[in-house]
Image 1 (cartoon, rainbow, N blue to C red):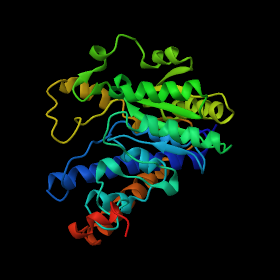
Image 2: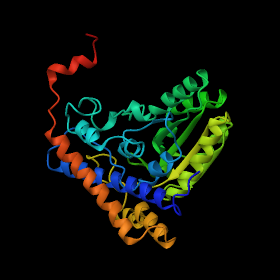
Image 3: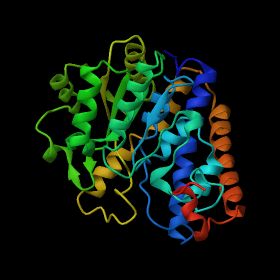
Image 4: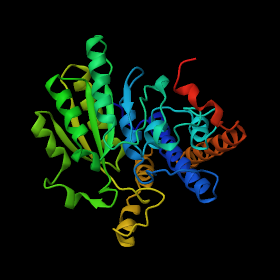
Length: 323
């Protein structure tokens, strides 16, 4: 388990990761608004502490599965920003050669088995990765990210149950951002904490402040160590909030501006900056350097991606049929 607050190197890395996620998604939001990006996308602005803290618990050889709101997971796991941006801009240099777009970025080199447009679609994939690791006698762990809406899906039940009965090395992380599309968690669930669902599968369930990167890291590290040691899966509920709508077509009619503003005041990046400066781990100059590094990296990614060749329709079937 790492100390992300009192160790300067760790603090810089985590802060830069969170700013990279924020700036990447702000750039995507702007490109879409200007008509330079097509389709749709689901932004995770406000949720940066979950992927940043969680992925710090992983090592080379571990896996993640992601969601339709997956930019943060990809970045925290080490994806190249220029290839991500190229994918969203339908460029040949994108992770899936411009064919998958925002919801289907995969990067096997970093253990990212893919974002997924299907709610809860990554859960059984993570169980499969855990089963493969166990059958190969490897010590790899699979981490599955999903939203609160996924917890009521059949695939979620099947994936978690399978991992539980076979003691698979999987950590299930629910990013509870309070809304499955427009459905409030208060209306969709009877339990107080979504982690209470773990009891039905005989596995540990933990709820954590998803806006606290260190807290997320600690509970995920404990779960990862348990999984790696053969103890089986854990369900973690990270309570957070998405500032933007469900997707670009969301008019936010189901929640109030006051509610959004209250959560914006709990900005996970600002909170982490306050914590590390109070601990005298980083100075204001260090914070500025992290912000600048993320800003410049995203700007470079946009420039590089825009210069890349467009994906072409006549090449589409090359990813479907063997030559």
